Length: 95
Image 1 (cartoon, rainbow, N blue to C red):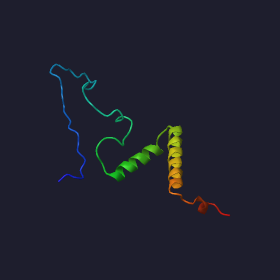
Image 2: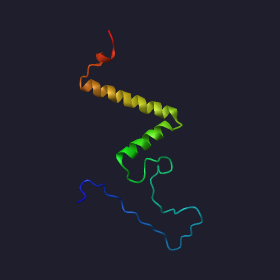
Image 3: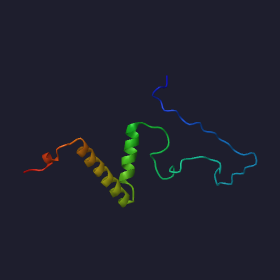
Image 4: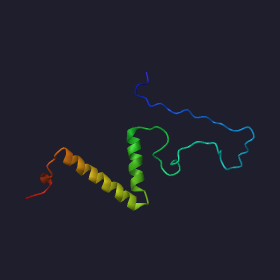
């Protein structure tokens, strides 16, 4: 019935009447601005494939400073979540 399916956008292949493509590509083509840089955008794939692609992109990204920043943000968010639910962090430290 389509309750759980994600709706795909319609794609149109418009070519003007007097347009001559000399190997430069169609100037009227609409595409995602990150298509050339990431493999996580594009076709609708499963959740596992998206996670594997994102993890592979994170591991193979040449920009180490960005990776470090993402890991710090994730760590701060996890600690903030543990603080909100009043998790006892003393179980990780021996007395």
